[in-house]
Amino acid sequence: MEPTTFSTAKLLDDHQYVAAKKEVFNVQDMDVWEKSEAYHEYFGFIIMLNEEVKGKKMTTECRVTKGLLDLIDIIDKWVDEIPPMEQPQRFGNKSFRTWFQKLQENAPNLLKTALPTEFHQAIPEVSVYLIESVGNSTRIDYGTGHEMAFVMFLCCLYKINAFSIEDSLAVVFKIFNRYLIFMRKLQLTYRMEPAGSHGVWSLDDYQFLPFIWGSSQLIGHPRLLPKNFYNPDNADAYAKDYMFLACIQFIHKVKSGPFAEHSNQLWNISAVPSWEKINSGLVKMYKAEVLSKFPVIQHVMFGSLLPIRPSCAASACDET
Image (cartoon, rainbow, N blue to C red; front, side, top):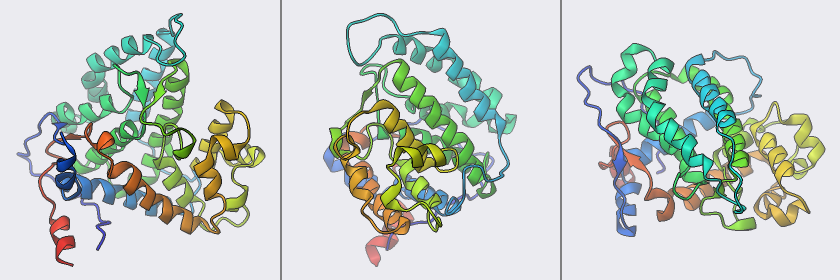
């Protein structure tokens, strides 16, 4: 039985937060990860949001929590203030390290402004995920593990009750989408290397989750069929409403040549007959290509909110 539930049980008043840290150090530790509370809560969180956005446009009216949007606006402006330096390398502009250091130094205070006072005691733990979500300052790269860190950051905000299920549309359509737009700017400005990219054989150089949630949005769409999504005109027409098409639009912006050559995995997806099958297939692919890969999971941070300890759900799965 696959765990698909996400717990939003209220934390005790005396809950002890800890600075999140790495716990997966070798391939043998992957079994501990896959049976951990963190794994089952994180995967359940993805499935919960997947259900919440099903069939809905990004322009759907929803309540917006401005604090995190303002935070992303601030770190976005820093990019303008720290322009890329002149250097010969194609990838990895070293100005990113200056920008990243500024985020490291200011993340706790940014979160104090973004979050109500009652959540400030959680900042030492949740700020780690925010910092991890923008890429690696040594390699100057970005990939699905960093994207995962941002979604774990959001997951932790649900766990501390800064968000509730009623906020889910805003969390995906406003906050996560704003993060995507910001990361595209960061990637282009500092020419960030795709982390762990398999070239044309990966789904996308940088992202994965917007394709899952974006395909859920398109379930039941009366006109846009899977076989048409890669058309540039369709991407332009639907990008504001559907996350999946916004990703396709960005790919057309940064890559040239036949779509089937530079984005082969997405091209293959266009042959799947329905968005329901695409969505379920992408969830399975995410588990196999991201959650089950040691090169990704070795960088995951674990704390009191997403702990490495064994999950009750894992025990139930073993018994069924």
